[in-house]
Image (cartoon, rainbow, N blue to C red; front, side):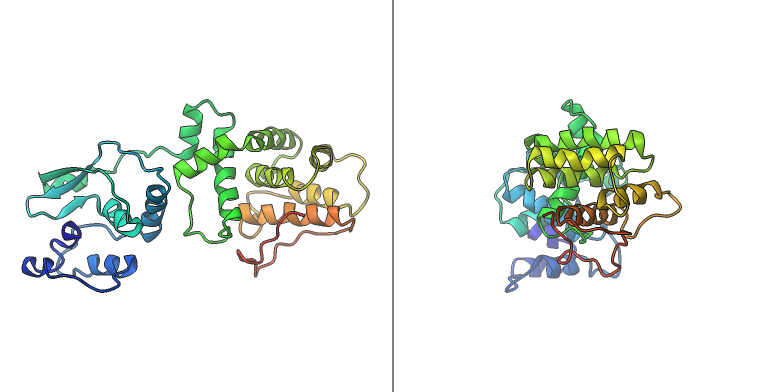
Amino acid sequence: MTMLLTGVIPDEEISKFRPSRLSLDSLSKLLDRRTSEKRNRKVSIPRVQRMARDMVNDNWKFTGDTIKLDETGFVVDGQHRLLAIFLSGAKLHMALLSGADSATQLVVDTGRPRTAADQLGIRGAKHARHTSAAGSLLLRWRSGQIMNSQFQPTITEITQFVEETPAVVEGATMAMRVLTHIKHAPVTSLIAAYVEACDKVTPELRDYFFQRLERGDELAVHDPILTLRNTFNRYSPERPVPFRMIGRLWQIVHAWNKWREGEKIQMLRVPQSLNSDSFPIMK
């Protein structure tokens, strides 16, 4: 707390600073209250929340990266980590570098960060880019946060989920087959729907749906699978559906549910009012 507040309030008041019910939001606003000079970037609360989740779930690993303080005691690198500790209440070991040149900010955090796809690829996973994207989408869907752009699973959460869920790689294999027949098939959304279908029906019924979607044979007019397939064939970069990847997932889930109910459909129009609470589940 003292490190975060250095340079924000007068030094003689820091030791007396004991606000009641101090929240992450109020603390981040306090850090951003400086008007005379801007000495740090604006706090990203979603980033702090992701870090805090990793800390709470024991997914935070000590890497040797330091919390850097300049010669005045101001945090020039590490405010998000310190705020995550504050939010999570975790007790962690952190390396501390004091007396750093204030110009350090010019060169830290400027490299290309590793993504979940990078980590899965390093571990030898197949279709790492697609499976990591599908893992993130599934975690948001299952958390009831699918339409909340501020909620993003961490790299550790995505990597663990994909490695612990074999159906993700199976779904990627299926989706790549569909892609060979349908040029703009939504691979990530197909994988997510496949994984959810694994928990709803027998493998034979699941495979029937996706194989018919792939090949397009033995389908009557207005069959939900055929309507979905025709919708995929109309996809193009110039005509994206609303909400992009999430909208495509809605189309798959809606077609699946209509097929399971034995109903016919002529079109798959994504509702403009779609939100996390109204997003359908697979039946």
